[in-house]
Length: 450
Image 1 (cartoon, rainbow, N blue to C red):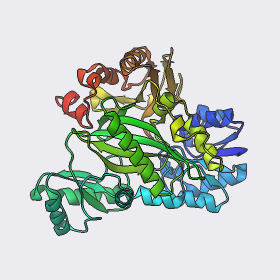
Image 2: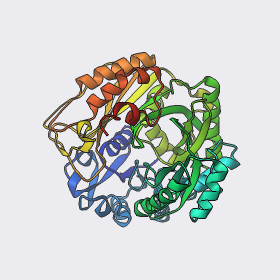
Image 3: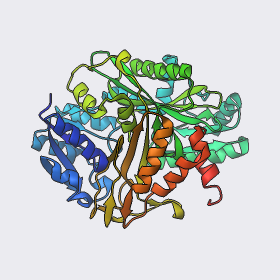
Image 4: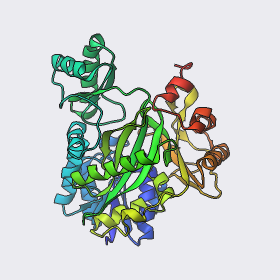
């Protein structure tokens, strides 16, 4: 086992990893930007090193400086968290070439699965259902037209690199296809440095269901059941839950087994998430793999009782998973709300600033993962999430009631947050019935405000 781990991230996930390390008797090294100087996780680390200015490109994305901090501090491994360099195969490789373990999959697996087009081919080879689509990348408009006619309109144009809805467009006919292709390619090039796009059949009103997997270096790969992440706004998740409320048991079993086949086909180990869309007839289709820990991993931890961060560290150190598939049971229902420093009444405009006061809810089955506190200043340079409120109860009905109560109790003075908006979602009959899809928030709750 490691003696010292560097955490190449910031905010809530940096503190989450740090706490797991300390409970395992592992010393921690923090890295930070000038904007995060004085943050709680920096103060709690055994050592801390400033990477540079507040912008990500001047700090959290500087591979050379991160490696130097690891070498100077004597860290034997680096945990990348999520975001930033967490799915950067080059960073992964540099770590290993420097004699530092990367707490995640191999660079080869990460590179293959990080490219959506390659991952799609791997899914087909693993007999995992995929949405009907183009045979590889489309190079020009004429190729796109041919592919779209074969698939049938409407089609979804997707960037082969990246995520978060960037490089994604819908074309309803040939007239809209040309413009949509050009826009998707330009956006993909600007966001990811890769203009490659491919086409998929557009699935109307899908649910977003993903499967948590973890594997060790000895061939044991398990799924930890599924999470429903359908409650989104502009492809950004707002609320996640486990298990998915309206998934038939037969489909759930097939979905989770498909995720394991996908991971085995990629020789994957450590934690990862295999993401699917589910149509209105409960047919599921592979969309992508996230080769890292996810923001929403706590809901899986709550229903399975497995600490995913600790298992990530143990797997990276070469240890065997202490469980087999038959040992993993999903108990009760868990819901997570991402608390963002945004103003829903002003089109979710980010609200950086100083938190003047804060009251965090508690009670049975309540967890709040956050690096913030009264007096903390939310910087304008990064993602707006200031914490994750998670509840776990015997039933989904009780979990919803508990989360509504917790959101009412949560007080964050000095900045706006999404907590009230999330209450509105949770109390809506559609959410209670489990009929929310990925466009439901925009179509039902925000249609009159757009």
